[in-house]
Image 1 (cartoon, one colour):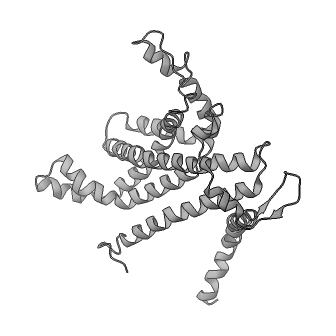
Image 2 (image 1 turned 45 degrees about the horizontal axis):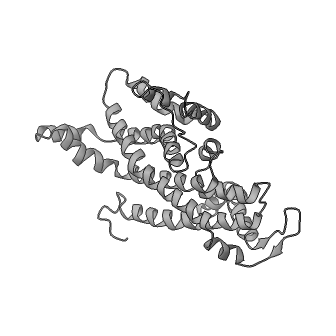
Image 3 (image 1 turned 60 degrees about the vertical axis):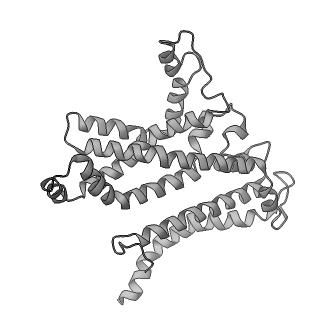
Amino acid sequence: MNRRLATPLYLLPALAVYGLFVLTPIAESFRLSLFRWPFPSAQPVFCGLRNFADLLRDAVFWKACQHNAALLLMSLAVQLPAAIALAVLLHYPTRGRTLFRTAFFAPMVMPTAAIAVLWQFIYAPEQGLLSRLIALVRPGFAYPWLADPRTTLLWIFVTICWRYIGFHMVLYMAALGAIPEELYEAARLDGAGEWQACRYITLPMLRPMIGISATLSIIGSLKYFDLVYLMAGGVPEESRELMATYIYRLAFDEYQGRFGYGSAAAVMLFVIALLVIVPLQARSRRRSPDNPTGTAP
């Protein structure tokens, strides 16, 4: 069989699955965003772009966007550097290295509901583990960690970091294992110390993996839903709303049922994700090993 004909045939099953489960829902969201339902059981009414016009004036949606942006920046500024530091420390042969690797990665395989229950116990105002530890130095201490609208997302972000830092650590450890040991030996012969080797060898060689890790972190921050929904149920929506939780509340909450408006918010999330990810991927390709100068091909 001709190779030009064989390649599309081999790709056809994967393309069919991708089209059915990815492209079709995206197209359906675009279609639903052009309609409104007077009430959930009514027939949809075509409204054009009115849902998008209303969304641009929706203060709650833009507040949710700000929360997603804050989550994204905190992930890039805290989670990824901490994962790199842990990967470098656990890359060296030390006693208990396997145990520490397992312990840091274990939260990644835990069910989300179990993590939510665990950290709700840790954050309990009076009897929680965190409040009790602080009460050892400040007797009678109590604080509504998850009930204070000003700081709810901050404490949930700590939980998100605890869960995903091990995942990014494993990515960096895989990249560290691919760095040739000869580079470090040559650096030591030239008199370089550990910090200089890390700065001039380790970090530059980790750059492609840092790009991949940052991309995954950005995508995850934009579409994050589960832990926020499970842990902050009793907090006013506007103080802890993310784009994904707002979309869910619009489309599926029994008091809302605004499928068209929720679909418009989902389309906006899709567009925002494209505007963030596509330039990042283009920049990564320009800086790939095949094009080390970073110039356009």
